[in-house]
Image 1 (tube, rainbow, N blue to C red):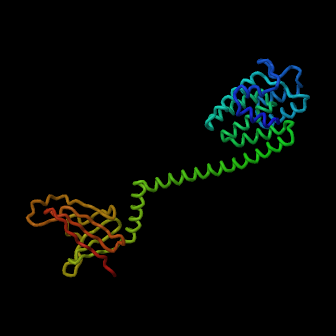
Image 2: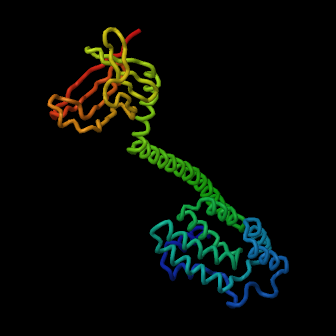
Length: 307
């Protein structure tokens, strides 16, 4: 059975088999490397533990592989390897796999030259969605003396991870874009935004109406000057501004309501108590709905005077 097959079995077999798959000799719990280990490897290990970069891990592996046999496995590394195997076997989510990967990482911190831990760490990273870490560790794993067929399989696995990493990036970008679009759509459909748009559109219309005069059949008039309605009338061919209560009204929207403050209930004849000015969508007409003191609403339509 090749090492790759043994390692795969190490992941998915029972916990006891996962532990039994580790055939390397174990040192005492207090030891990291035997005193007889080459000084260069001890120095490289110290550098790796101080700064665990991929380059430092690669340096340790290359020095270890150059020895007659790989150094023994520290008990501390075995402890974390066993813990990682147990967690990975029970993993049901990416977070679970990430916890297993953390255990394997700690095993490799103590024994960077351990092939089984290196490969298991890569697979746990893959399951956790950490494709870059998985690729890095499979690349380090290929530094060991592997049979040709196994080296080929590992390299193909790296290609698979590259594809998964690209897809993950695209999926993340698509999800982020969808979230942004949903957020923008929610903002656009909010009552505040809709009201602001409507107000902006009305303000633009109002600027085009500035200076227009509207008149009804009785020759009463409404002028628009800026944001103000000015009521007036033609009498005997002459124009008179005002002459009615609240002849100047601030325009607040397409519909502007103004309540006449004087109590007109005492009048025997019908008199307006509230006006509602409604500008048509094209701006060519103004409808004045006048609520009388008799409780009825009277409509007066003013059309724009064409010059």
